Amino acid sequence: MFDAVVIGGGLAGCTAAITLAQRQHRVLLLEAGSYPRPKVCGEFLSPESVALFTESHFMERLQKLNPVTIDTLRITAPDGRAWCSRFPSPALGISRFALDQALAAYAGELGADVHEGTRVTQIDGDLRDGFTITAQTSQGIQTFQAATVIAAHGRRSNLDRVLKRAFLKHPQPYIGLKQHFIGPPLPHHIDLHVFKGGYCGISEVEDGTTNVCLLVRQDVFQAASSRQGDSIAQFIAWMGGQNRHLQQWLAQATPVYPDWLSIAQVSLMTKTSLEGDILLAGDSAGMIAPLAGDGMAMAMHTGKLAALSLDRFLTHQQDAHHMKQAYARLWQHTFGERLRLGRMLQSVMLRPKLLSPGLRVLTRFPTVGNWLIQHTRDLGLME
Image: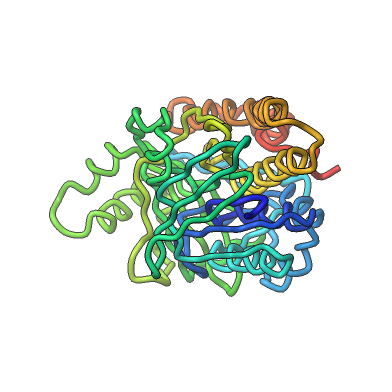
């Protein structure tokens, strides 16, 4: 029997597995896909991510992946107005293709059992009697036994239906798209270009490529690509016409992959950090609006907190009831305000009549921008 099964081998899941393995627990990490593979993600590691990597002794491995240093944010509005701000500490650009594989390998070196191509289809049990996890693999159906479970399976998956999660009852209006380009250099900065119904982030990652990742309302996407043919190509052409800064960059860039990656039903609504006796981490527990730029750090932080909570239970420092209570309170205290502020900022960002005046305010009063940066991330991690 494993001390813990972690479902999902992304940032939150790998961080949870690493944290538990470093504390000498027997850990099983189950990843439905395989490494390496690209994911729809902004691929932007905010400054506080560095503290998490340093704490887990992963920083030296990360540097070998050649991440790009990013120290400046630029936001542009459809009317051409722009606002720039420097980060309090450098951020990093690194692809999920490289990072997830490196984190999973590190978890394995620390003693975690890492199973790829293993899609969980059922979870039975509780913290009193233990759990049975059923999964579909290339060899057929397999079952695993564990004392505890962390579900870090991402924004939306079949496992959410298995757990009968409430957020599935509410359709989500957003689509995410991502592509890598070879294009004009962005010297140490990340661009966030706003257009009607969405926004597009552009920043460099390793190996001389640039990540372009965007979020758009589904109705806007459909209206812009209603003609026959390649709907994504039609939408990208329309999107460029909505923001001249974005158009100028895309016109000089060449896509790396033949197709864009896409995800539908992106949920920014409130979720739960617990489902019965299962702890949730990463996007499965709640996703901050991408414009906040803290999604990757937040995923790793939730994975760490979930693992530390289970460590207290497994070492008999807390019983199941008090451990779950403490995790739910800590999750809400640490991330609740950030998620609410992220949703509020996104609502402003997607309204051009509010965005341009907002950028004027940020230009005139830089402390307002600094406050927003502080309150959409956990700068305490950097202390």
